[in-house]
Length: 341
Image (cartoon, rainbow, N blue to C red; front, side, top):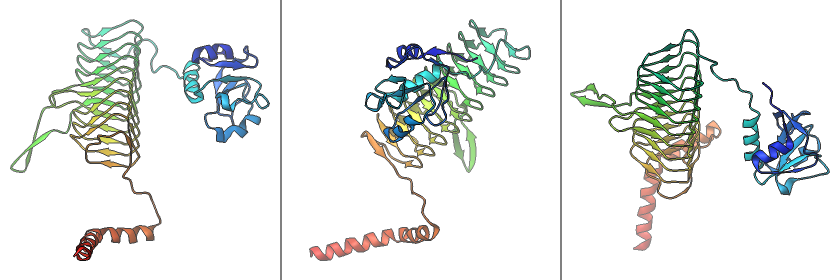
């Protein structure tokens, strides 16, 4: 369903100011290049300011330094245009709910407790003793295990599996195929044979957490796996047992966090990164994509270890030289000793 707001209402919503006709009506967001009448665009990077002259948007979100009355008749002026765009996009969002009402084919255990205005899609299962908060939507074919707790306002898309006794906070978003609470990879070895260790912990997810499609969060072995409030985790990530992720950390797609590692607050972890188990990363760390983190990081900053792609011939030469690195190091140390003597 289309929603329409005046630019004045949008400015009040994000705490900005309007230059121009504040009654201008807005019903959608768009880029500067593709926007049409009735849509609002944004300029977050001054490099694209030339597009202000050609955009067909009815209004543009700009910072004070980029506001140009000669190019744009109506502007919403604010210090952080990108954050304002995100808030307005939420307000104008037309994404449908994964479920409306309770489908006849849904299976809900008699001992499960459902709050007000809960929606459950076709063939979804809610198991014994689960507690579902107000305004929760659970998509088709999702499975909610025994004694699971889901906080108010959380949205669970199609085909999500939440194992027994796990807890999801309020206003979370779990995308299709996510698996919460599968067994951690816990095994003992006896004479070359593997003996499974039952995984008795849970997964505890705080408020306002988003889990991407086909991401897996394993339950703890004895203690819990914990994802704190405000974290965002992209698609196809693996969060192993007993991992702890502190508040407002962002993890990009295909990242792997090995068991019992601890990630601090406000960290940014690039895609396809691998983080070793039983290590700690402090607050405010940025890790570039394709990095391999094998020891603790104790100082905030930007870290990287990936090898950039190059042409095949150069890569082979460098690979050969890398194999000679230890011998070269020993030769240099020997030469240094000779020079000192």
